[in-house]
Every structure is written in C-alpha cells, then in structure tokens.
Length: 412
Image 1 (cartoon, rainbow, N blue to C red):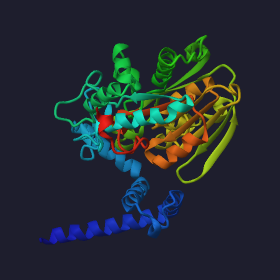
Image 2 (image 1 turned 180 degrees about the vertical axis):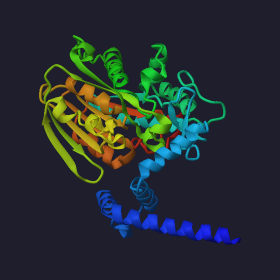
Image 3 (image 1 turned 45 degrees about the horizontal axis):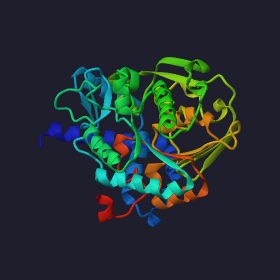
C-alpha cells in the first residue's frame, strides 16, 4: 500500500467514525423512540429475529444524519447518467418516468389453485350466515397494457400469475372483479390510474373503482345499494387537487431529483356524514374519533407539511393502512355490514363505501393469522366479505384463511 493510500484510508476512517458519532449524538433519542414504538425492545422473547433485524435496519436507515440530502444527491447522479434503476434494481422506471418495484421472480410461495381453494372454503364457511364473498383483484402497477417499460428491466410483473389465479377462481365459482380488465376496457392509461412516485392507485381511481364495486354487487348479489346513485355521483363531492405536492413511497426512496413529484387530489362528500371510527395500530395502540368524514376517516393536514419527505399524503385516508379499522355509520344503523380482508389499496375505497353501510371493518391481511380471522368472523355478522388485495399480495400471508391441505375431492 502506497503512503497516499494509507493517508486516504486514515482520513476515510476518521470521517466515517466522526459521522457515526454525530449520527448517534443527534439522532439517538429519535432512534430509541422509534424502536420502543415498534415494541421490539425485548429481543430475548422474540421468535422472529429476521423481522426484527429488518425493522431495526429500516429505523437506522431512515434516521441517517442528512439522509434526504444524500438521497437527493444520489438520485441526481443517477438521473444525470441516465440510469433506469436505483439501489440494485430495488426501484426501476419506464419510458414515461413512472417508478416500479424491481422484481426478478414471482414472490408468491403458494400455488394459484390453493389461493382459489382458500377463498372457496371461506365462502363455504360463511354461507350459512348469508354472507357473500367477493374478491377484489387490484392491479399491480406494472402492466404491458398501460406501462411503457425498457427492454431488459425487471419490472414487478405479476400478471401471468394473476391470470392463473383467475382460472381457478372461475373453476371454483368465486365471485371476483379483475380491475385490470375494467381499466383496459375503459381505455384508461397510467396517468389515469397510478401515481408516478408511488405503487398505489390515485384517489380519483379509487373513487371510480368504488362505483364499479357497487355496480357489481347490485348485478351479481342483488345488493340494491345506492339506488339513486347519490354516493357514486362525483358532483356530490368536493374535489381538491394540489399540484406537484406528493412524493410517494417509491419517490421518497429515490428522491425528488430522480422521480419528481405528483399531484394529489382529495375527494370528500358534500352531503352529511357521521361516523364512530376506531383505528387499531400494530404497536397495540388505538385511536378513536367521531364526527363527519373529515373528522374521522380523512385527514387533510399533510399538504401543510413543509418537508416533502414528511408529507405522507397516502396516509390521508384511514391512516394509510392500520392493523384493523372499525367504522360505524351513525346514519345507516341496522343496514349492511362489510368486512375487507385487505392491503393499503382499500383505504380510499372503504372510505368512499362507508357512507352506504352500517358497519365497515377492515383487517390488514398480511398481519392477521387464521385464528385472528376466525375471531373476527365470529365477532360480527357480515353481509359481504371483500378479499381486497393487489396482485403482488396474492401470497400465503395475504390469504390467512381457509388453510388446510386440499383433498382429492376438492381438486376434481
């Protein structure tokens, strides 16, 4: 090793140690508070060290001193040299600058036939109580029908697997809505459906999807919901659009310099609403509220945040996604009860549907066990159960119900 290499190594180590010390000094209490909020302080009694390690890694990464500046600098360099991926293909972009998760293989560890069988078992389990089960297949962001990808980039394409799942849904007579087909038939494009910087669909798309669900229930289940069309008429809602304000979860990882910003639209009713809402969080805490939809289910505080990285507008509807939500409609008492076994796509959808129902409950599928689901099903009578998941959550964890080894008779 030459003398100048030794000098560089010493300087680098001094800077690294100094930066680490400064990070601990300035961020120590914040890091400790976040660790405590995740309830992972007692490591000896935990059975899931992989999850704990991943959580700790995220906490430390998210509290890196000057993180946003480093993030923007890296994004600017990637943009300048024309890279179509960031962080070893964690995020990739297409020709129209939409961001996607990178994925080299199908992440589902369960066969399509078993997913369909689980839904069929749920249908059979709840049918004696008069409950009807409907699968809402939300689209994953990448789809050749509306995406314009670069050749060779590993976009998260789960559509072939989704098509296979639908074959078995039809085989087992499962009632479902494939929103990919709905959007394609409507001639909708990426700009109509998704944010550039986030994997979620937009609020106007979720409102449109709500109308599709109600029409489907009326057609296939004789639901007779919203006979006057009041709840599906956009003219009965206030629409507020904030331009170039939203940085989605994918954009926060790649930076404004790489991804840019999205517009964000709030949609909320002009007509009277009254709810009692309880949000249950993963850390065991809960939040109760009552009043109009803007006092309970929708939060309009995020546009006022000056820090674009802290402006998590995706949490505007039902806190983004909670472990469980209980929504009681004070104006529809004695009416229809529904349950969403869901992921984060359903937050705006359930918000728009809540004024039509007596009770709207939601459980976050990825964090519920089969015993948890059974307990929920026994606690309340539901007229409709929506298995409402994006395609990439069609996994073993996403379907925590109807789990048993398929018999030969079921396979026929």
